[in-house]
Length: 390
Image (tube, rainbow, N blue to C red; front, side, top):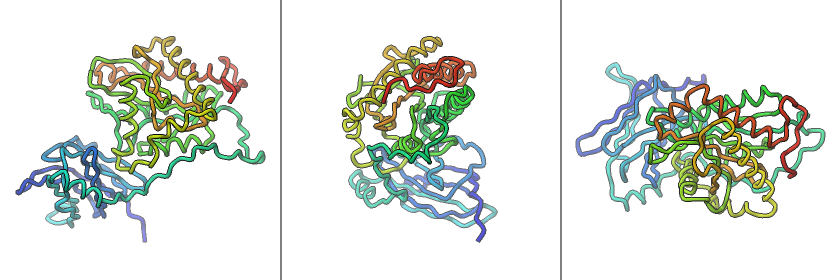
């Protein structure tokens, strides 16, 4: 049988039905088979569908019990997440056939329920996506000499934060964190590769969702020598600006670092994945003698990065090097840092982060810190020694 093209989404709308149900309608050019389930903390309704293509960028909408919706590639299909104002149940989930000159319509009617009933409904719901397995806390065995890569240059894995159904922070200007981080990751990749000093790999090269353990696994499977996760923060106050560099610690350096790590670590849960058992204790497991070298190297690189940002006249927060239990930094054998490039909650900074000259300053600052970490003198591509023995 021929493979059907991705269904085209013609329109999405919300309405209120008689009896108080909130109706979510998605008009398509072909019928699809939806899988529906509920999630708590916060309450959400999730639809897993075959691949979809949006006719155009549809504006955000809210009505009734639905305060917003988002979509993105998830695995081989598309995941739609309806963020709810409170507990709800699906009164009906139907795929209506084409009629009266209109294409097929996916219609979901949601009705508010008591919290106790919602808890029971969530337990009965079964996400289609399988549970993620815990990333093993051991370094993969070394390849035989005959299979060792001939290119001995340091391998840098760049992780554009968020993606797909997880947009990350959204600026007052409309800029989405997932778009900014991907743009910056590609720009940084081009800069590092053009120097001739490094090999570079991205955890994602397009707008798709990757779990936090999946990002770590990509870096470890590739044998990364350095892991850089790029983000752009959002905070309640729109006056706070500047970059911050984060490293892994089982104890957060301050309340803001703890809150940020908490929010970032919930990315998988908010996208509809079940939490990996034991994930919350992984940071404390890592703080051992066998993993101390990678942690120290990560902190050493973070210090170089802070210094380089200052050298390039990039604004930073008052305490620019902070630490907390970020799940994405939990590779036990790779120096890892999370770079918060600025605050999207600041209209001024959100606009600055989209300016080409500002983006290039960030890229050059990171490149300088990378060169110092690997002890690569400017203009010399033969130096490939790690900054500290591991």
